[in-house]
Every structure is written in C-alpha cells, then in structure tokens.
Amino acid sequence: MERKHLIALAGLGSLAMLLGAFGFQYIGGLAPCAMCLWQRWPHAAAIALGALGAAVPHALVAWAGALSMVVNAGIALLHTGVERAWWTLNLTCTGGGEDIGSMDVSALLDPTQGAEIVLCTEVAWSMLGLSMASWNGIVCLVLAGIWVAAARSRTA
Image (cartoon, rainbow, N blue to C red; front, top):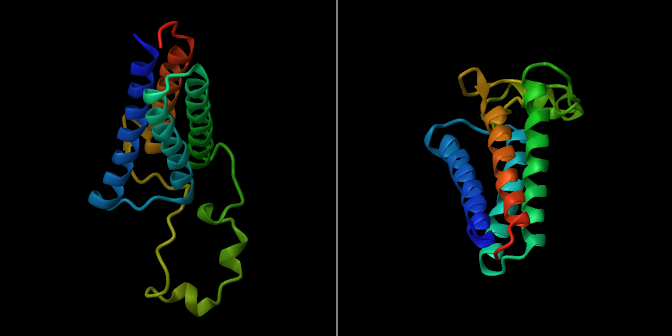
C-alpha cells in the first residue's frame, strides 16, 4: 500500500477515536477525567499529521504520527495503571491533588459550584474487562504500527 494511503488510514483512525470520545461524552453523558483529556491531544496531532501526510507523503510525517501514537499509548498505560491501582499519582483527578485541599469547605459542599470532578481512578465504561483508556492504548499501538508501515513504505 502506498505511504499516503497508510497515512490517511492512520489519521482517519485517530479521527474515529476522537469522534468516539466525543460521542461517549456528549451523547453517552460520560464526562472525561483529566487523563482522558490528555489522551485526546495526540489523536488531534495525528489527525493533523494525517491531513499533512496525505498531501505531502513524506516519511518524517509518518514517523511523527507514529511518535504521537506511542506517546498516547504511554498516557493510556499510565491511566490504566491509575484505574487499576497499579500505581498512584498525586493529581486532582485522582483525589490526591492539592487543589481540593485548598478549596473552601462551603464550595466543596455546594452542588451548584463548578463542574463535577471526574476521578481518573474510576472506570466510567468497560468492555471485556478493559476500560476506555486500555482500549485507547491498544488502538494507539495498532495505529502506531500503521504509521511505521507508512514511514517504511517505498512508494509515496
């Protein structure tokens, strides 16, 4: 397969993942935690790289796309580990951050103040025993493989 087709496929894969995340959020009503939002940025970068690479199918664009997916897989692994209590992080979204402790008690108890805090330690949705973060990590590794195949392709 030609490099530009592989790049387009990988970029469309990230677009599908990002649209799926928005669907879970806005249609399914599952608010994302901070770490969920972190995982969206590499997909956005991959979408932009996919558009660029479809027009200019250079191997460097494909390597950048692969890097974005490997980074995203790392974030997903970090998030999965937090969800499964393999490790702990001192973040607000895990309940261990300093921001909550500095808030006024009345603000903490007032349900009309601010948005609901979504904890990164809680699994909002799972399939076959794997959370959205875990599935995102798996898909990111597959997409990274497509990006690498694009980078190594001999035909532009």
